[in-house]
Length: 449
Ligand SMILES: C[C@@H]1N[C@@H](C(=O)NCc2ccccc2)[C@H](O)[C@@H]1O
Image (cartoon, rainbow, N blue to C red; front, side, top):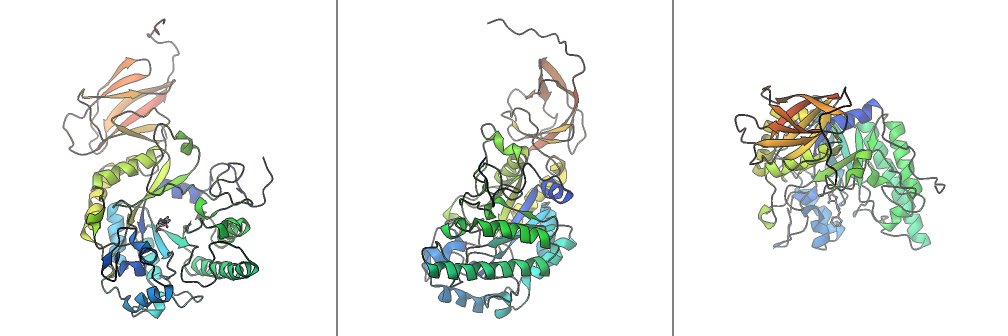
């Protein structure tokens, strides 16, 4: 291994209670809310197909003109308690809130910039109200924070001169101050999820990313930090130059997921995926017909897929400029919530099973119990299950029904699990109770070939 001063400061998964809670939560929601919600993808009469929170970039709007949107920031229908109730009903255990996105507008009354909620007609500390409302519902709050800040004159995409160096040094101090503000004003925060860290300027300052991780962990004991913050001595990101994961969990699965058969390496570390409901809209876009919008079942499959591989999934919501949610997002939250109410025990506190994935769906595991989450019921009416050598199935019961399901051993470590006698009409879950095989001998003989 090569010596590193700013590489991973820990090998292997964190094993403390705070990280276990992060892991057990499994299902989260993203809230992308900022000035970009006001134009909703349209600028000077032209609708842009790209991500709505990047409209300033697509429409090439100068920052001082973009920040004038603050004069229109007045979300009269914003109700933090209603947002928290919606999250609880969806069954999410945590919510990641954009404290500041690339545009530089802060949802909290930061002392270090004029671009905050304080200097809008609305005035109120939106972040503070959301932290309290979610926490009151027993929901953990995570902070999204974009290092890249288009509103700040000292931000640099690269460091090419002494002037760049001095400006960026001022910018990093400004960023430190904002992060200390967030950590001290809202001490119940459980995680910082950094974004906007891909530029050369950050890669050339890996030391600073290591300093931020340490600073926040000193200020908020137990807090988790995503790998996307981190660059090492040589600008290597997420995984250091020795291949070790930096931060507490990998955060590279944005709008994509690891292959459940070919990418099993991710099961060796903690990771969290995040996803949009349209193809690529995080902030509010007024026209969702411009790209495919995932159905609740397609969102659910991605949630189960992530958990089946030992990861978390964060589903994105982009609130309207008035502070309410669009109907599609309210319906999605209700639909996912109904399913989680019945079958959520196969999600919360569950992990990768280590079993060989089958066509009918995904496995998750909790202790010695293995859950079969069935999305594709077979015409054979039998769900094929192959157990690892040394493991046998004791019994099978339907989740949310508690009915025994017949299992038939068909070969060594192979079983047919019957389908429930009544078609649930939705993805359903069967819980397998397992035990370690006692006798080594079995009645099977391998073919001689
Ligand atoms: C979680 C997402 N990450 C932000 C993002 O900038 N993603 C990468 C990206 C880079 C370049 C053009 C568009 C998008 C998106 O705006 C969301 O906040």
